[in-house]
Amino acid sequence: MQPKLAEKIQKQTKKEFPDGIPSFGTDAIRFTFTALASFGRDIKFDLKRVEGYRNFCNKLWNASRFVLMNLDSKSINFDAELSSQDKWILSRLQQVKTEVEKHLADYRLDLMSQTLYEFVWHDYCDWYLEISKPLLENDKTKQGCEATLLKVLSETLVLLHPIIPFITEEIFEQSQKLQSNSTGKLISQPFPEPSKDLLNTEAEAEIDWLKEFILGIRKIRGEMNISPGKPLQCFIKSFNSKDKDYIENNKSIIFTLAKLDSIELIEANREEPESAIALVGEMKILIPLAGLIDKDAEIDRLNKEIDKLIKNIIKEKSISYEITILDSEDAKYEAFVVADYAIATSGTVALELSYFNIAYLVAYKFNYLSYAIIKSLAKAKFANLINIINDKENIPELIQSRCTVKNIGSVFSKIVNDNNYKESILAASKSAIGKLSTLSNPSELAAVEVIKIVGNGK
Image 1: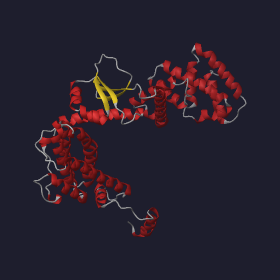
Image 2: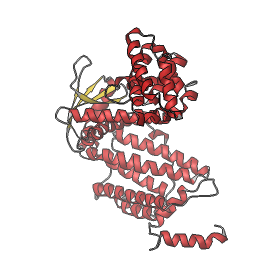
Image 3: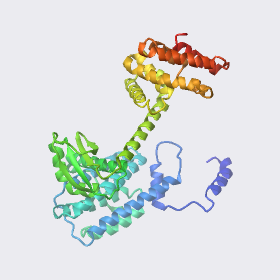
Image 4: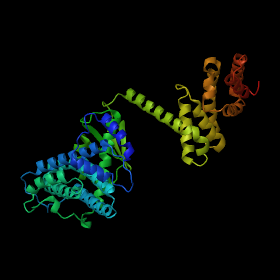
């Protein structure tokens, strides 16, 4: 801080925090400074970040409560057989240890804290603790899950201890009661080393599949506004042998976390019910919608979403299309989609001139759209154009649009050669010219020129 700014900063701080800066705890402050310890000379200290790391400490504490509550006064068998879910979290822990060692060696405390944050919050708390609930209820997987819960918690506490020493020490001392052969303080524990024997790519692939499966169903619930607690029927189609094995291995977890009533595998040639679909690779997850949603309301919602996406594409792309489209195959395809959508909705939605501009650029500079498509679009646009010009009050809208007079006239002049449409174009042109013949301002005269071009000067 520059000394000359001290008084100004003091006043601003008192104004922003009239009751003083709120307390978030020592561990939260330490985690914040560790996360900000990059190689840059300046940091942006934000109390929202401190609050976020305070929430992390709370989450770690609640996770430890769950583990200790489920394991209290029980004998832990660390040699018990492990499920694929246990193998997954242990494999992830080994990767985290390796990353932490590398970041410490590189003096990147910020990356170390980020790695630990993501592992604890997402992998351990969000996924493994939830997965462990059905595992603890199954006698075959219970002992392995108990041992894994405690092992991962204990080693994670050691990894976190340099950053947040107070809360980790408290949790560690409480967890020691479950390990009769363990004594001492957390600060004296050796730093955990990664074990290559616990790395398991197969288990990681299986749990990645499981997470995609559950998230797919949750996404359907969110999009269809289906209650999170409502049991759903589920059909599986286009599955392979590995998908089938994964479903069988994780059935209890899927039922619990995805809140399903049933899962049925159906063959490819069997007709599927009307369903919402989520994909996991090539496999289809089908959730029948009968009785779950209002079909008309859902169609209306999707149409509104399509309109919103198209408008965003226009807003982001139309101004710079003349430059970007030269080198972008994706831009050409996107323009095709936009133009095709504009034609399909021309009967119910007033087409914006920017739709036409994009279609024109693609069709006549790159021959990407068929002549029939651009002709149909131009016909629809011409009808809308005449309506704008016939209404004197709205003439400036034509000029203010992104579509230039030259582009409109160029395409319309080609269409007048279509005998089936020629007479209606000429009649509309003469009508509009007649109405505008007395106008004098630049915008109105430009509109007249458009009609003259369209009517071939007639």
